[in-house]
Image (cartoon, rainbow, N blue to C red; front, side):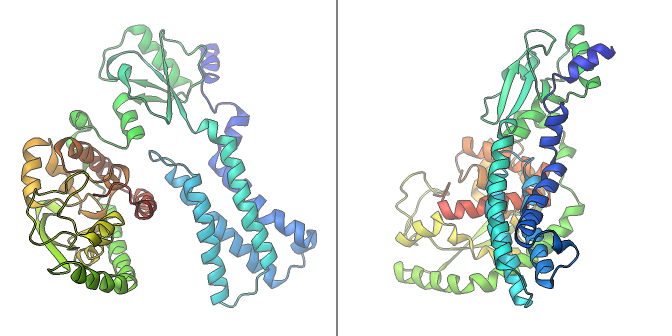
Length: 428
C-alpha cells in the first residue's frame, strides 16, 4: 500500500516540491512583496536604509506595501470563482492602489520618494506579468474522468482539460483531481481506485459540483441533488451586505446626482413623457415593490412585456445609449437606500413576467430568497434574458450566486460590472 500511495502521489499535479513552492499562494505573495518593496529600496538607497533610514523612505515603503498587497490579496481571493483570471484584477488594481495610496500620502502631507514609488510600480507590473506567464500552464485544470453516469458526459470548457480514464489507473496522467458521478454504483475495482486516490491526496469531485465550479451555474435538473437547504444564503452576511448597500448608496447618490439630473433633462427633450419610469416588480420573499428607472421608451408605444432582441422600435434615441451603458438603472440607488433592493443580487422581474416564468421555469421563486439587485452574477455572465430558454440559464446563475453568496463574490461582480458598463455587454 505504501508503494502504491507513493506512486499515486506523483500522479497529482502540484505534488512536487518545486511545483508546490511555485504555486503556493503564500509564497507568491511573500516573494512578490519582497521583490516590489525591497528590490527598489536596495537599488536606490543601498543597505544603509536598514539602520539609517529617513522618514520619507519609511513612508514610501508603506505606500508601496499597501498599493501592492491589496490588489494581490483581492486577486488571490477571487481566483477561485469561474472565469476569473488574476491578471484582470491585479494590473488595474495596482494602478488604482498606487493612485489611492499616493493620494492619501499627499493628503496627509507625508514625505515620499517619487523615484522609489515609480520604480516599485513599474516593477510590480512587470513581476505580475512574468509571474502570470510562469504559472499560466497550471491555471487550466486537468481532471481525470471516471466513465460512469454524468461524469462521462462533462461539457467542454476552455478552463478544463478532461482526461477520460479507460481503466482504474492514472498511469500516463498527472491530474488535479478525479471526477466521478457519486450517484452511480461503481465496480469494485473503480471503488478501490478512488480509495487509493483519496489516501494519496488526489481530490475526488462529484460531477455536478465540478459543473457548478466551472460554469458558475446550478443546473435546475440537478437541484434536488443540491437539496433545498443548500441554496439558503448565509444569515451572517445579511447584516454586512445591508450595511454595504447603505454605505454604497450614500456615496454613489451624491456623486451620480448631477449625471442623473442631466439625463432627466435629455430624456424630456428627446421625447414626450416623464423622465422616470416606475413599475411593480417582484422583490425579496415575493413581496412586490415599486422600481425606479429612467424612461427609455416612447410612452405611446405598445408591445410585449420585455425588450425584443435586436431593434426594438419602442426605444427612444437616447434610450439606446442609456440602456447600453446601464445609465437607466441609476435611480435604483434610491430603491437600495429604501431597502427594496441590494446593489448586488438577482435582477427583479415585472409581475407579468414573474407569473409567466413561474409556470414554465422550475423553481423560479427560489431566486427571491435574497434581495434583488441593480447588478448580479447572471447579468455579468449572461446579460439580458427574457425568453424562457434564456431565463432558465439565468436562474441557474442566480442559484449559483445564492448558494455561494459572499463578500468576495460580490467584489468580483462589481469588477465585472465596471467592465460591462464600459463595453455595453448584454444590453437590449
